[in-house]
Image (tube, rainbow, N blue to C red; front, side):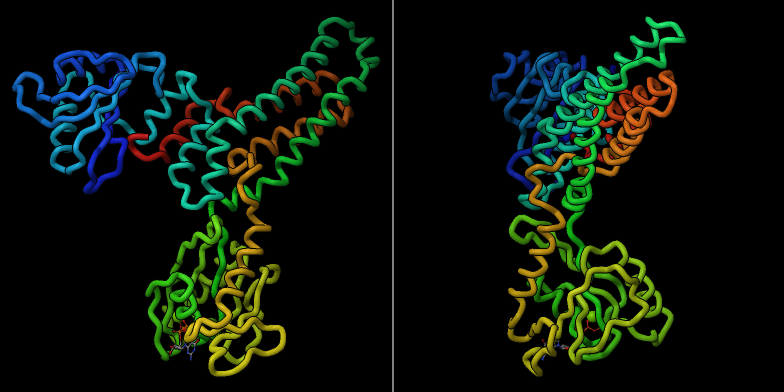
Length: 432
Ligand SMILES: Nc1nc2c(ncn2[C@@H]2O[C@H](COP(=O)(O)OP(=O)(O)OP(=O)(O)O)[C@@H](O)[C@H]2O)c(=O)[nH]1
Ligand SMILES: [Mg+2]
């Protein structure tokens, strides 16, 4: 096993940087760098010297966690050094020259922790989300999952499936063929019915939790010159999009990510909808129409009460917003806003937030926050429903139950396999 190292802190100017190390060469390296092996789990202030040459690299704290009580389960150390780019580079260069050491791949520390049973796959994913969390509700959800909330539920479900499987397999093992028809399906049903209900309930919450990870997407749409870009800038309180009296100014989608009361809301400014004047504008308009299908809400902006064109797909939730309220009052049924004097903006934000909250929840009870989890749960539920229906021979029922257990095992990484692990851990940042 090679020993890996990577900065655990981000690049750029900072007071301190933390370099993480994990693997069998850690002890030898610490002696070579600092002159002695520090006591486990006690911070020690040391001078780091280049092994051999003896040149001083930096002074800082060193922490040593012997295997197996470490984040990776291996011998593990952290060097807390000065955060200057040259200091960090100097230490990294020295580490790379040390025999048996190499730079870590993205997610490799977490992966070693997973392999050594320090955390399961769902917790590793929760940790990755925690690092990416931008708002309070996202943080709450990620922390629950990193803390093992999903793992505990999935393990409970898996235990019930295995119990049901044992019932069926005992029947298959100990009865002769003729008796099998007499198997008491009632007991099986008693285990499976509540289990299916729980899986169904967890799946019902999945769309909200997945949306919370990704954010609530609001498309700002309308005819050219309606004031879409001006509204985006006013909401973001920054000059993100170009504003001009020329119709057809915006072509690309421009997004602003807002944290509104802990909810992640993305507003996207778009090209004005009309018969496009040129090829580039047409591409812009096509993109809007394609993207709006995945949006949670469309704001239809117009200064003169123009209706939404038929080209906009049905089924998209919309809110009619009358712009430039400083110039003329909104028509009946429209929410009036003025980016010029700020009128109506708080009401608009409140209305968007109200809808976002309904759609996203607050992360407090969420479990199934990823498509990977949702697919596995859906597969498990389908297999359990088959088993519960009891229309097939017991051999098939046993196979259905085994396949449900496998599907659940995939969520926590108890079964399967390298390609899932590669996919999950490669999306982590380096040093995680
Ligand atoms: N009086 C007034 N003028 C506004 C308001 N909002 C936007 N405008 C003006 O309307 C014009 C068009 O604004 P934009 O925000 O560029 O409009 P748009 O909908 O993004 O236009 P396209 O990108 O061309 O589709 C600009 O001259 C803005 O200054 C408002 O609330 N009040
Ligand atoms: Mg614009």
